[in-house]
Image (cartoon, rainbow, N blue to C red; front, side, top):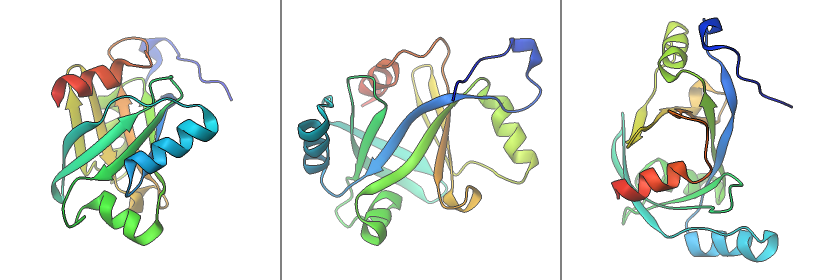
Length: 167
């Protein structure tokens, strides 16, 4: 499958440019990143501590992002009781695919398009010029979806650098 960006003046609805990354939830970042590193030779950057704001409140997370450009983000709850979306997901499903992050050509247009369909984001992540909206799994047939727009052509380590600067 190939994604092509049409001319900017042709956007009248959401345009998904491509898959930004997959997000894997786990209860043990070292174990999960170690398994992927050992078995698939995928390297991961340093540990990031993040706080996300959603309609359910503030959530502290830890994350490691692959530094080889594959597009894998591994997240774990940083809450002592795991009483947040990531902790609940892992309790119910175990380690596994948590979300699909998609790059869109125009984040505001994508948000408006979904809002017109009655779908609103439950959270937002902003770091530097990077912004991402988080959408609840109930709106996407059980899959947590993140939409992101980049202010320039995608560079594999741009998101990592923006998040590193924020933490």
